Amino acid sequence: MKISGTLNKKIHYLLSDNKNLTSDNFSCPLCNKYIYDSDKVSEIYQCKEGHWGCKKCWTQLLETRKECKTCKCKVESIKDLSRSRFIENGFSKVKLHCPNSLQREAVENIENVADSDYDFHGANILFDENGCQEVVKVEQLQTHLNECKYAIIKCPNDIHGCPSEFRLKTLGEHLASCDYQLEICPNCKSNIIRKSLNHHIDEECLKTLIQCLECNSNKIERGDMTFHLDNDCPDKIIECILRDTGCYHEFKRSHLPDHLQSIEHISNLNTRINELNEKIISQDNEITELHQKRIQISNQLKQTEILVSQTRDELLTQRELTNLLISRPEKFESQWEVSNFSKREYQKNSFISSPVIRVGHHEFQLWLYPNGETNTNNLALYLVLTKGERTLVNFSVSIKNNNSFNNLNSKFENDKYLEVGGKGWGWGFEKNFRNDGYLQNDTLSIDFTINIKKQPLTTDILNVTK
Image 1 (tube, helix red, strand yellow):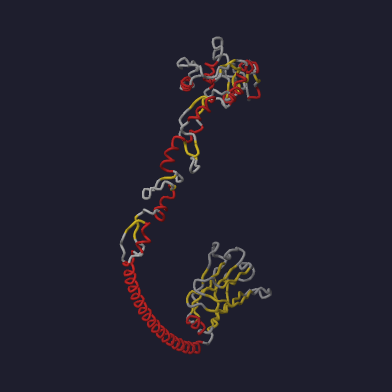
Image 2 (image 1 turned 45 degrees about the vertical axis):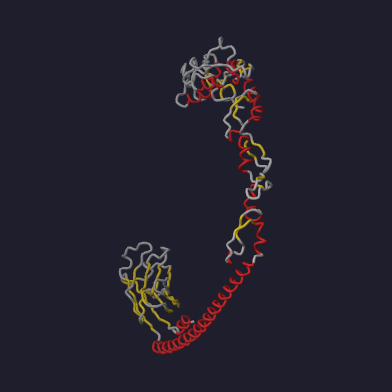
């Protein structure tokens, strides 16, 4: 058991010979508190002139000033100080009354004294004749407190609501009568606090045997009472099980067999059978009507399929005629000249677009990236479809080098499906277009051919009408 944080205040009253000792004898000159920290004598350090204080105070002092507060001698760190074993050992041999000798009211009075008030004259300190009577040395105090049976503790049942506090030695006596001690219910074996056990057994326990208010049986568990009343109780008033046939009598469950033998039930059953037969006939008629409607719908579906087939054949014929009319390939050849090529300022990812190129009913553009789309060392060129349906295009491009002695002409050809909004056909070229003979009068000339390859259009119609 650790010592309370207020023990530093209590020491003044616990000294067995406080007439010959004052707080100045063993109080730190820096903080005026007794040299006791938590559960042991504080470490005491002194300067070379013998001025001493507790380790905590020296540490705080040296954070703001590097000198002794009393004599002003230079102190760089705690390592420049020496332990004052004389002070430590002297206080270790001082005799104290056990803190558990004080009355609880006395402890509260001490705790209410301000930390800055170390005269303690205003506190009403009383020793408890039922408290611990031991007198021990300071160096033995923590060991004694770990074993002392007079400590004031809370009841272990405080988690269940017990507010009691008492001396540790009376724990067993308290638990024997504590209203909040857990006890086992003799019926359901649950843990119930002592003061609630009788109420639990009389009002709540599902295993307690109670009396049925209908048949007066006293051998029914509380948890089974609802089932008993709904299914077993012979004196429970119930309705006739043939209520749907028109019998509205009520009687005790035990009278049900005799009630079912009455002639009235046979008449009611015959009436009910006749009603059900009429309902069956009505449902058969509804089934027949539904069957006829199904046949009508099936015939209508067949007629619709014939119309769809005829329409499809007509569309195929029309599309074949259209294919014959437009089956001639569409081709466009030209040259795009980009003037002032080396004088323009090109930003990364920027491009130059060509004029609109019309091939049949399609429209294209060339997009030129002088510094490349992603790599600044490349020139990139794209063919982009800007208007028209998705189509297969054969595209060739060449950039002629004006130095005839260098075989540096660049040409590329490929087939690709293009669609509006989709990625165009791309071509990258790693050469220096400004210095290697590709410019004439600072103009870059790009020769290109666009050839639209026609595909059978009837395929699209077949896919749509399948």
